[in-house]
Length: 306
Image (tube, rainbow, N blue to C red):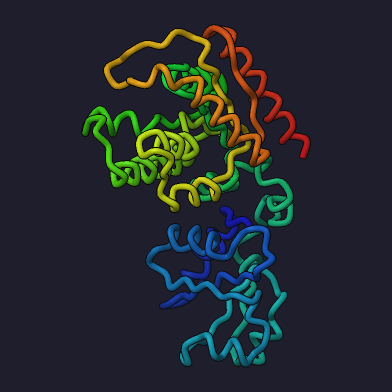
């Protein structure tokens, strides 16, 4: 934990020794990284292999090992000699791949202790798990898109555009609950895609809290339960709540000028009630950018000390 380039190297080395390779991803319920997440990393890196997720930690006993593997299994590959005894009791030839593959420059324990410090050792598919995420929230015409782009430029990383805006540009503003489902799912998809391109921090122009509040506006307080659930399942390291203290501009899609103050207070109430880390951003565009940069710098400095 986590899956890193050293694991890739060991698996590729094992592939050179056999006709068919089974990769066991073992996990327990108390692991810091869920087993299903680690399985996803391995399977998507090696889609051609038989990757199996085993719960209850390591196979452990020879009896369990025999029940897991096909009868014609002959070799047991490992990055160390830790389970050589289990392999031998199962009748398998144990091969310690770390010796054959050569010494890997960084140990798994060091990567596990501080993954961000060893960023280059993490495959692209793993990096989104450790990306710090900053979500920009606010009502209409408060500069979220402008600020997200400026922050991404300042910190040399990526940002996520608001999916709902591009959706409405294509399909119009006469939205149904099904449209909100598309918007929520599209926002999450875009975020996960851009997280793979981000440099340690990702800026998100809106999130599902905003989607939820817009649903409440459109449907008189109603929001689909799964949107609320997905919103609670997503983790963000910081929320920047933008106040509606700059002039409202009608760009052809905006039509809720008189609800800006209500929406701002509704968003603030949600952040405070859930005790989510947030900073309120006020002032003109230059002041907003300056205060947002300072808030993000504090976040990065704090995480560097962890």
